[in-house]
Image (cartoon, rainbow, N blue to C red):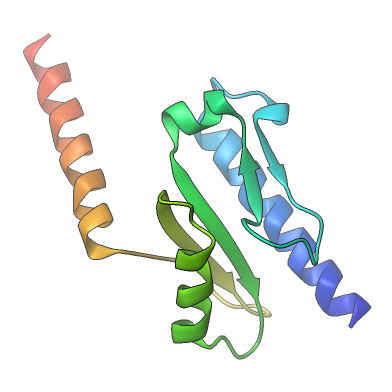
Length: 120
């Protein structure tokens, strides 16, 4: 049990690191991993972080991930934010599950940004 909690904690911390590496305007205090066993979201965001990345994250690092149950937990904990389910397993790929509508919203933002840069 302790090793599975440690594995989950490391995965949450890796997600935090990936977010901070991606959004360089954020400070380490803006995104932090929640202690294992705490209810709700697995990664907490400051108001500044919510401005750039308004999502709710559930992190799963398990050999057998029940997608439906994990997704339902992600949505239940999302507080109206865009739910993201980050999942991995031993020596497995690192995956993100999200609503298709949010995926296409992100693609539209990229397209709009590209168009804005090309107009400049």
